[in-house]
Image: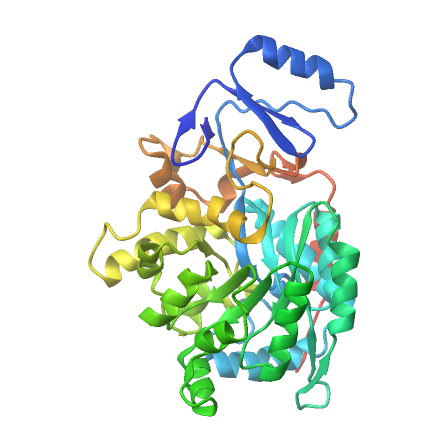
Length: 429
Ligand SMILES: [Zn+2]
């Protein structure tokens, strides 16, 4: 069974992939035979029998900090301020580049195992994120930081690294599976005049910005107190941050005027439901975003505030939460949520068509084993994906036309080694 788009499924068809793109979806035996004959001598030619499986687009995680797997379960049940400044940052100061690499590899394995094929990452050092992504086979949108915070003396000291980030952008933006944005962590971590420099850089290189926006009420009230009542979203609009493609993570406390600004500039919103709930940050007004026609996507956030990277959980939560909150089960539909986790996410992160099983789209796909009793009978494909399916049902992962995981086994990642490396990382404050 093939999930094409907009809830349509097709059966008895073959999906032909040439290079990294879906060439055709067909049941014409002559076309299929001709395709096999044309390509069977190629070294990376393979055929997968999809009977008993659902072929669907890979999931897209639009906001995470992949190396934070090494901080899994640290500082649970604390406020964001206590968690970030008391538990996380003091440990992050002791991370080595090698720790970051293995943390990111572990995250990417976890994501792929639960059906994610593309993710949007924010962490340092950039070179370790790109190395891990090139090694894992995943597709990623990775942002390079124009500013660097040094906490090693116990106090925050910020350095401007625009030249370095521009250099990294030029070096990595031509890689096949990488899309490079610039990082604007947040309005609370950096001085305002430096944020404009990031916008200039993104405009100069014609790329996008990945940011945290309105994660907590405190972020907004602190900013307004220092800036004559201007809200962070208004300020960012005023410096042109939304003139380029933007992925804004969280977007919890958004009023109607903020939502209008997001819509006016086609800002892509990355909702991080589990992280917001776990840190008690609030609940993003997702139904209002959809009503306004905003491109809404889903992210897990870093593993330390989730504490996993399973996008099926994010879909489940996004579909359920608002029904209970507003006593209205019609507000968010299963299909809306599947779109958020696939085609909308891909639109936010990439410039090529991706996120659906359609001709001309990038071949990022997963095969989900439909044999589990919890998946039968199917009756409604979107309800199945949103309310029944588990990350552990994912059997095979194809990214950029390459088979990365087959029958739940990674073909070229040493899973045991990565697991033992992350377990050996002990971070003290
Ligand atoms: Zn984040």
